[in-house]
Image 1 (tube, rainbow, N blue to C red):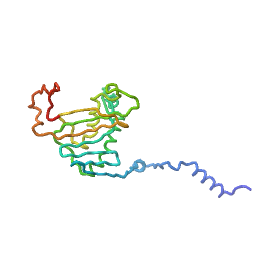
Image 2 (cartoon, one colour):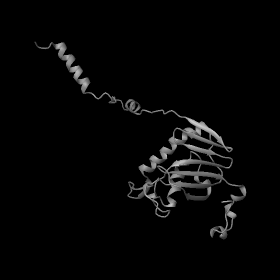
Image 3 (cartoon, helix red, strand yellow):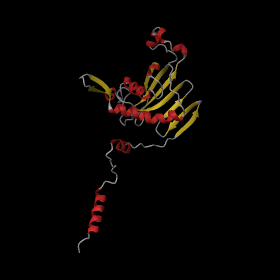
Image 4 (cartoon, rainbow, N blue to C red):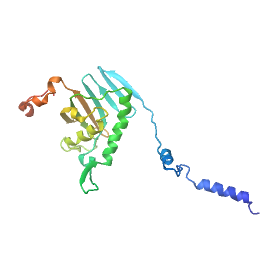
Length: 229
């Protein structure tokens, strides 16, 4: 016995629903409405554990942020950085001039830092640093199973670490990276996935007038330390 017209209509309707992707976002003919519909923002929960240890505040969040606020410094734990070769990409503009721009990996790293620390700085009402500082960086390369010497251990060149880190924190932790007039970088024991600790140390007023400071050759030769470094 043949199907009635109504049965055939229902069969056609059910088949179309089965073939359709249930997770497909329906588009509209209006561009603005479509843009709003596709621009879905996901709000992730934020948790912060703040604890005072030896007079310093440690703030640790579920976003993997770890900030230490001391009387004379602020320190942060950062993801392991990028090499200079991975930070920059050469592009040619419409006039045929070569320009260096941030790579996709560098932009992703900076966005990751913002996502990590922006909720925290708002949570603790952190005021951006705007005074002369010394920056200190301790890089811990990713842990390797092979045995390496200190010289042969895989890592970035020492001058690769500051650039992407300072760019990522500018406007978030400090107003501008021209506040730094001293810099120190060290390597430390490797850890899983690697990380970088960076600190902004507030300098004494007597140490900030570098325009009138003569060359300290004893410090240059490693025979003396400058400004308690």
